[in-house]
Length: 94
Image (cartoon, rainbow, N blue to C red):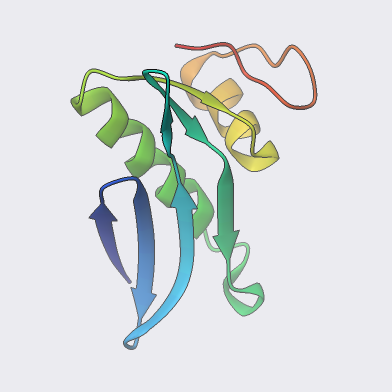
């Protein structure tokens, strides 16, 4: 599995095919992790977790703040960065 980071996206490639992605556009100085996707046939293999981890690390490397509107990313942030999920659609900014 190869992971590629672009401006506001990290994606996974296997056998030359894109099989997953996470997007994090910047809005008013905050990166919003708003979409995580993994091909159905590859779910349960930790790919989504790796995508979100790489996105968060990239945002942190840039010195940016982040929040999540994607439910998977919200859970990841709660488990791995200590964010408290305050509603179904938001995670406090780091």
